[in-house]
Length: 273
Image 1 (cartoon, one colour):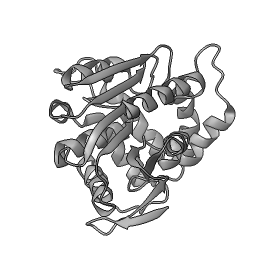
Image 2 (cartoon, rainbow, N blue to C red; image 1 turned 180 degrees about the vertical axis):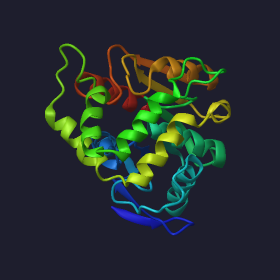
Image 3 (cartoon, helix red, strand yellow; image 1 turned 60 degrees about the horizontal axis):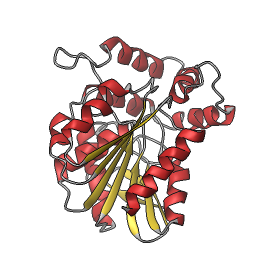
Image 4 (tube, rainbow, N blue to C red; image 1 turned 120 degrees about the vertical axis):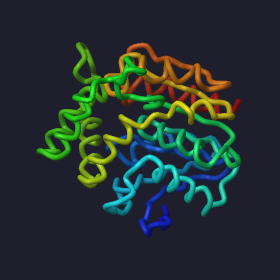
């Protein structure tokens, strides 16, 4: 466990477990590094150095008014890699964290990075536009912002259902999983949570994807209600040279149970390849 300070004076919390080749995880919105704990433990037990930070405004990191934008998120990640002098890194990003690691590569290049893993990631673009008809309409993201501003506790409780597919017939999602989602979500500052909606929905990562020059695993559930696969992984994979697309039939956005086990196997195989 540790902290570092960014260029604008924001303190960022991070976990650092195990030793070996570094695997750096970036979490989704509105969560924090704890969301990656099972995978952090998994890779550390298999001889890797597992790291994950709380994005600014989230979890145990500082909550500045400024800097809640994708470029700054990427620069904060760059600062972590530089301070710890991490090299030959495998970057792993879920959801918004997938945008963060892709933007990192777009802004800072791959000198420190050997491989990339995107899970349920937002690139190339979530928002529906004339050039991106597969995206979701602006009203979807407006409703997320409204939820953050008005009774966010109930909003996060409700959001946990589609996040883990608990609203699907026959779904067996433990209440504890949904409670943990709520707890992590309540730790993100309102300003950061509100600003981040714009960042994960309206940021166009197309050119960042096209510039990726490291082996890439793109994994996505085909029943993802938060980041639908048609606007995300299925469009992103052809843009990335040397990308492998893994689709998990029936899997939601937040992986649990058999879907999480499948991703864990694929992650380890990709690390060891």
